[in-house]
Image (cartoon, rainbow, N blue to C red; front, side, top):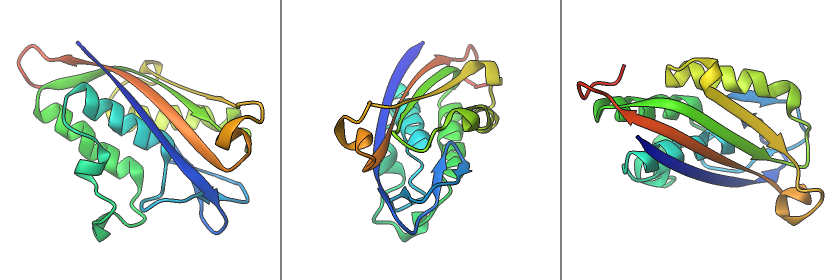
Length: 163
């Protein structure tokens, strides 16, 4: 078994959609980034890649590559899951936390977990997505951005094939 941790943060800006865990959330601002800037999914991809010692999302999906401009991060996550499967790992569990002062995310968390579970080929009971604020402290507390942490446990499959 191997453990991975991922972190991502993006600035909030006008004129962009706010997407977290593949869910579009109504808000006056969205996250700034080359892709859809889904901080939750980016943190998860980094955790998975790190657990398998396969680099990070910047290596696999460089912002300098126009192919990833406005890319849907759940599609990128599918690619990461396939990479893990190819090297013989399966995902055991995912625990993630989104840090945002606004908007309130509680009602969107179950859909985020469902989206992630579906792409990662695990049961929704193997995925935990939580949200918290920083009570006005730091860049997230000031409403300047949103951050996310993810921790994953992956396991080498018996036959070298994920399943």
